[in-house]
Length: 262
Image (cartoon, rainbow, N blue to C red):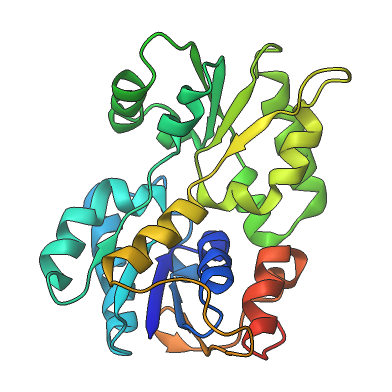
């Protein structure tokens, strides 16, 4: 069994790690577009074209499912990707986890890239799933880029800036960019207030990984001795994992289960 994941950069790692946890025997194909990063400021048609290009590269490895592990690509390119690859290869998109966050009763903050924060699609999700819940969108400029580079100082600065603009009474935070799940612990530490109940963070990785397995009719929990494979594609060419991967637990999970070191 092979699962392909695509993103502009290393934001696909949380979902890839979630697939690894559910099925350590899965072959993973990680296809990204470092030459085109960041995707957020690009025109929708450019994002679609770049998404199709890296998806085609992954499709050459005949995956059983393709996970679009990127909110921006899901927003702009999901219809084109499904038209190209389905029904032969299920395509699973990623959207901010507004629904489970709002189910907690709120108040909720949605941390997202500046482009996503103002997108009609995000606000449509909020209207659909968060009626009666106060939701604050918090643009987080520079955070995804800092995570991509594993630039610790820039990550801390971007998190601190977003935390200052997050209301004090927020009880749940939606991590509205897949990169943000890689620094979830640092986001929680910046927002958690002494004496308050633990802050809930909501990212899509676990749910998306489980949905991919459901779409191809595969159960989790194979024998623990099973060992998967890993193929890394950077702009369509086989490569090693980027060095920044080793800075994150999810990256180490993806690499080490496959017997590969970043």
